[in-house]
Amino acid sequence: MKLLSQLINGLNAGSIYALIALGYTMVYGIAKMINFAHGDIIMVGAYVVWVAIAVLKLPVSVGLIIGVAACAVLGIFIEKVAYKPLRKAPPLAVLITAIGVSYFLQSASLLIFSSAKRTFPVSFDIPAITIGSLVVPGQTILILVVTSICMIALHLFINKTKAGSAMLAVSEDKDAAQLMGVNVNKTISMTFAIGSALAAVAGVLFASSYVYVYPTMGSLIGIKAFVAAVLGGIGSVPGAMLGGILLGLIESLSKTYLSTQLSNAIVFGILILVLLVRPSGLLGKSRTEKV
Amino acid sequence: MAMLEIKDLQVYYGVIQAIKGISFEVNQGEVIALIGANGAGKTTILHTITGLVPAKEGSIMFEGKDLLKTPAHTIVALGMAHVPEGRRIFADLTVYDNLKLGAYTRSDKKEIAETLEKVFERFPRLKERRNQIAGTLSGGEQQMLAMGRALMSHPKIILMDEPSMGLSPLFVTEIFNIIKEISASGTTVLLVEQNAKKALAIANRAYVLETGNIVLAGDAKVLMDDDSVKKAYLGE
Image 1 (cartoon, rainbow over the protein chains, first blue to last red):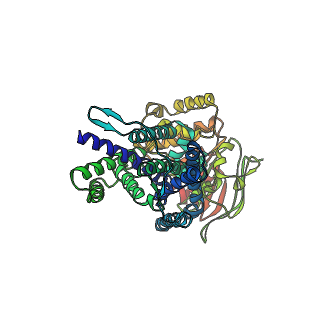
Image 2 (cartoon, rainbow over the protein chains, first blue to last red):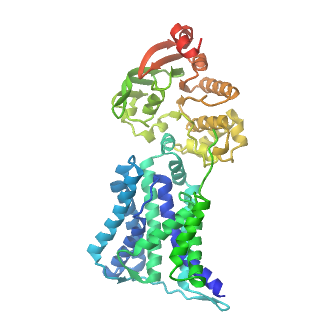
Image 3 (cartoon, one colour):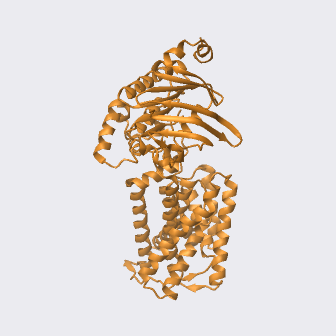
């Protein structure tokens, strides 16, 4: 029973990692860059919701919608201002810029909100479900439901809509996509918007679980989600989902059965092992081209 | 008036001038071949026409519209399709998804379905392999897919860049037969080819390029008998 409840804990954390990892992997797929500011979008989303609900006293539902929308717009804005001018620049320049944007967001929120931890105003009071001696917290159920809905919606969007097929085309070959009539800039903007909106959802779920909002809250979870994306195969949407869930499970099990202090080391150690055996990640492509 | 009229086109890659003031035209219904050695600028010309590469000077008029002033992603909807060099199919997607992307700018589902039927008629292999991942097709099949994908936009003119490159002789013959069929069905063709012999055999007119300039132009049959062309491009 202990194992089962730890697995559920792992699913809980893992599905948040997966939501964030989706943003990393989608942006990588389409812009071929690691958006290291992605983790900080989580923090911005949490702060926007905090301001809307705790300061402006808006209804919770309105606050949540504003948070998600603000992050989508922020994602588009960051791409236009910071990354688009560097589209033909060497990858290192883009990488450094992304790290710069990350620090910018953290410092800006430090200036605006100070380093004080704010209490996140949203908590979802959902009764726990008890199955025999197993207790599943309501929060966990909510997280699993919300992340599942997001993932299914994203899957349908990518595979069943025209805009989704444009995304797939741009991620494979921008020039060829443009020859098909796809507006590449618009598609890249859309990808950043979707990734950032998912990060905002993750931010709300994360902050409501861990109660506090603070300027560096996105750092570690952002890095872990990045690890999840790489573990699953960066650029692969199912890979990000799998990587996120796996990471959550490994973390939870290693905390319980091995060592709490070493759990991060174990998580990153497993990443290194997987990459040694499969450099392109679990579901990443390592196909040889046929001529 | 010519369907496609290129005037004084100059293209630079950084400081290097790739196209040095080229003018030529393509009339409705023609098959025009651009031939020349590697690096002569053939591919650059096609890329400039469909907006993949910006021009420095000149104009590219397509049915009265200056393509240099048209956003690149809207060009296909004007009736111009481009089969790029190296095919550039979407290797991770299925054959069917590739073809669907070819009709990206069209919205009438019924018309798209009709075009798809026509493409499958022309390329029965693509129909057999419609659910196969495009990257697993053979080179010749990928070329057919690239052509089918271009036809899905129902173009008035189709630009083809080295369609025979890297293919077995059997496929080369097949591809050129298909180009003839496409032309016979009323689509204008602008063909870039290293296989000058095959290209001249199916073209109405041709232009010979050398390092960014047109050095010879004229009727394809006449060029085929031209001594300098024979020597430089036909290996005779």
